[in-house]
Image 1: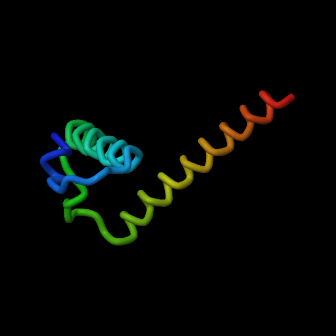
Image 2: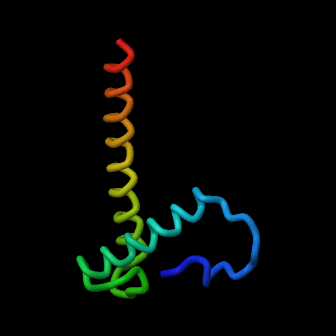
Length: 76
Protein backbone atom coordinates (compact mmCIF):
# COMPACT_ATOMS: atom_id res chain seq x y z
CA UNK A 1 0.00 0.00 0.00
CA UNK A 2 1.34 3.41 -0.92
CA UNK A 3 1.27 5.58 2.19
CA UNK A 4 1.58 8.72 0.09
CA UNK A 5 -1.94 8.04 -1.20
CA UNK A 6 -3.25 7.67 2.35
CA UNK A 7 -1.60 10.87 3.54
CA UNK A 8 -2.44 13.19 0.68
CA UNK A 9 -1.49 16.32 2.58
CA UNK A 10 1.86 17.76 1.64
CA UNK A 11 3.52 17.87 5.01
CA UNK A 12 6.47 16.30 6.70
CA UNK A 13 5.67 12.85 8.03
CA UNK A 14 7.36 11.25 11.00
CA UNK A 15 9.41 8.40 9.55
CA UNK A 16 8.99 6.37 12.73
CA UNK A 17 5.20 6.64 12.56
CA UNK A 18 5.26 5.60 8.91
CA UNK A 19 7.48 2.66 9.78
CA UNK A 20 5.02 1.50 12.44
CA UNK A 21 2.09 1.84 10.02
CA UNK A 22 3.93 -0.26 7.45
CA UNK A 23 4.72 -2.87 10.11
CA UNK A 24 1.03 -3.04 11.06
CA UNK A 25 0.12 -3.57 7.42
CA UNK A 26 2.65 -6.40 7.06
CA UNK A 27 1.40 -7.96 10.30
CA UNK A 28 -2.21 -7.72 9.11
CA UNK A 29 -1.35 -9.53 5.88
CA UNK A 30 0.65 -12.21 7.69
CA UNK A 31 -2.11 -12.77 10.25
CA UNK A 32 -4.80 -13.00 7.61
CA UNK A 33 -2.79 -15.65 5.75
CA UNK A 34 -1.84 -17.59 8.88
CA UNK A 35 -5.22 -17.57 10.65
CA UNK A 36 -7.55 -16.97 7.70
CA UNK A 37 -9.42 -14.38 9.75
CA UNK A 38 -9.09 -10.86 11.17
CA UNK A 39 -9.81 -9.21 14.48
CA UNK A 40 -13.21 -8.32 13.06
CA UNK A 41 -14.24 -11.88 13.92
CA UNK A 42 -17.12 -12.31 16.33
CA UNK A 43 -16.58 -15.86 17.56
CA UNK A 44 -14.53 -14.93 20.63
CA UNK A 45 -15.89 -13.69 23.92
CA UNK A 46 -14.66 -10.62 25.71
CA UNK A 47 -12.73 -12.84 28.13
CA UNK A 48 -11.18 -14.77 25.22
CA UNK A 49 -9.92 -11.49 23.73
CA UNK A 50 -8.53 -10.52 27.13
CA UNK A 51 -6.77 -13.89 27.33
CA UNK A 52 -5.19 -13.32 23.92
CA UNK A 53 -4.00 -9.90 25.07
CA UNK A 54 -2.67 -11.31 28.33
CA UNK A 55 -0.70 -13.99 26.49
CA UNK A 56 0.80 -11.42 24.11
CA UNK A 57 1.80 -9.20 27.03
CA UNK A 58 3.34 -12.15 28.83
CA UNK A 59 5.43 -12.85 25.73
CA UNK A 60 6.46 -9.20 25.67
CA UNK A 61 7.76 -9.38 29.25
CA UNK A 62 9.88 -12.39 28.28
CA UNK A 63 11.35 -10.46 25.34
CA UNK A 64 12.10 -7.53 27.65
CA UNK A 65 13.84 -9.80 30.14
CA UNK A 66 15.91 -11.38 27.36
CA UNK A 67 17.05 -7.98 26.11
CA UNK A 68 17.87 -6.80 29.63
CA UNK A 69 19.94 -9.94 30.18
CA UNK A 70 21.82 -9.41 26.92
CA UNK A 71 22.49 -5.77 27.85
CA UNK A 72 23.84 -6.79 31.26
CA UNK A 73 26.17 -9.32 29.59
CA UNK A 74 27.39 -6.69 27.13
CA UNK A 75 28.12 -4.23 29.94
CA UNK A 76 30.32 -6.65 31.88
